[in-house]
Length: 198
Image (cartoon, rainbow, N blue to C red; front, side):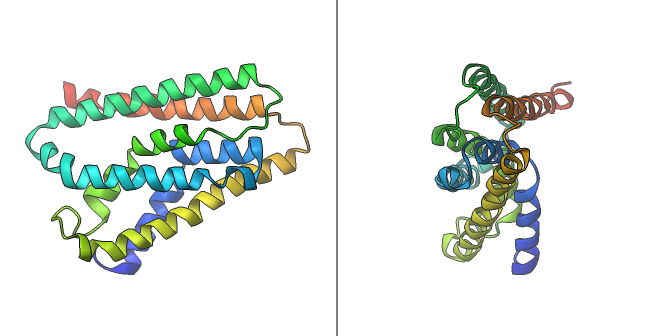
């Protein structure tokens, strides 16, 4: 997709779609507020950068030769999301009055394993699969800018929910809601391999 406007719109639509990373960003915004959650945008950028680079330059060529690798990747990503949901749920149970942001590492690993990275790496970003890094660079920079805008919006949405609730939502409830959404994503991702395995 070499048209810059079409590329930007496609990336914006994919980034804005609710997913595991966005769930964690909104959860952190709601639990800790906007300012304290801003560092998580760096976790998202780093996670996607590593994911996109690895998928397009290393794993992409392997996937063409072995569908089994794609199944294993989906199962591993789904398992991590369910595991992360379980830990986030436990935090909701144990830290009912905590106002700590979601951990940087959790956002980083969740983004690293986010299925959206596959779409960016293997479908949307032009030139990268052919290892034409210089031609892909403007698209990567544009994608990074869009990530910051969308991440700010998700954190801001969580912070607005917190402010609008006027104290009726505590951090434990917010973390449990976020954990439930993460678990659903994990189960759906793992279940998506069933038709392939038949």
